[in-house]
Amino acid sequence: MNRFAPTKAAGALSVDEVTNSRRLRRMRKAAWSRRLVQENHLTVDDLIWPMFIVEGTNVRQPVEAMPGVFRYSVDIAVKEAERAAKLGIPAIATFPKVDLSLRDETGSHILDPDNLINRTTRAIKAAVPEIGIITDAALDPFTSHGHDGILRDGVIANDESVEQITAAAVLQAAAGSDIIAPSDMMDGRIGVIRSALDANGFQDVAIMSYATKFDSAFYGPYRDAIGTAGLLKGDKKTYYINNANSAEALREAEQDILEGADMIMVKPGLPYLDIVRQLKDQFAMPTFAYQVSGEYSMIKAAAANGWIDGERAMLESLLAMKRAGCDGILTYFAPTVAEMLKR
Ligand code: PBG
Image 1 (cartoon, rainbow, N blue to C red):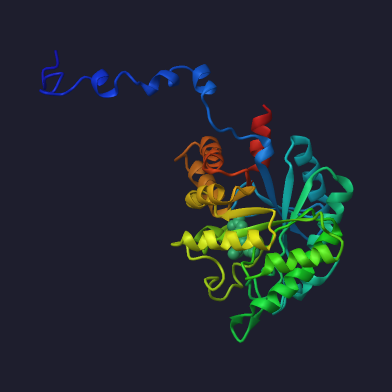
Image 2: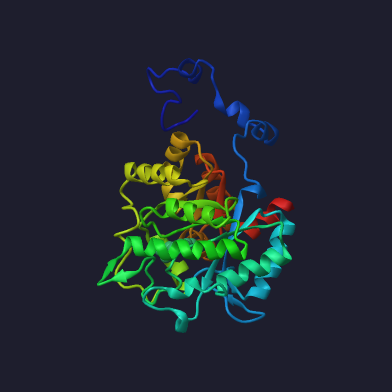
């Protein structure tokens, strides 16, 4: 007998009375039954590996704010691409850390057919043709001010930026890029890039639109990784989506789809799963999320302090994106997850 209170409060119905004997715990009772009714799965086919590239040879430079993430020189990037292909990772997305001496007001080095990004694409395509290469047609690694557009009197010049990004996209396709992924959020970029790719014989090069890229604090460690953190003047609020808005995100995605995007992406990932679900339901497009640098670093930092189980948090965050409607995820955890899934 419980000596502090009666075991049943006066007037309370029994559990069977309120549930009509529908007990959801029945299927949770054992590992086999939980497996049987599991609705979503994370597989290696879901993974895109974002990779940082730096000049030099035999370089593996740790990114300080992202434990376990490195900047690779082209030769090592090729080796890592081989490893990724062996693990079954379908695609890599490359991001260059460009020498400061090559950055200028307009990001003109993006138009060099032999810049770091294009050299990386050629080298990986030559050595590991079976892995997909996604390149970011964006100016921020190339501008001296860290913005994704060309600045004219302190204002981002939309159409001029689109022209330059488009010329860069054609060069990236010529280098062997399979998917052009413009991350700059300039208006009209998808349609203009599509037309230029087609006019230059690259009908089979796809476009992954960073359709809904939000103004976010979670990009912090990335800006350190590509060396724009100290450069950026002001913020990116005049081109990224206000993170309070979702109807605007739907309009952005619709516009990019009408202009010819083959795949759409939501960025960041975990704080924007409502957007993923809305886009998937509304447009039935191949839909991706980018688990960005800050999301990665938060999990790593908490795990390093012993505050969460890092492996479980990693898998849970990725599975949550699948559940929300993602067909795949860009994640810095890609090689780690692929290795775990293989075991
Ligand atoms: C910019 C770009 C960003 C990321 C990739 N490309 C964001 C930004 O600096 O505004 C973020 C990726 C990440 O945080 O992991 N074109």
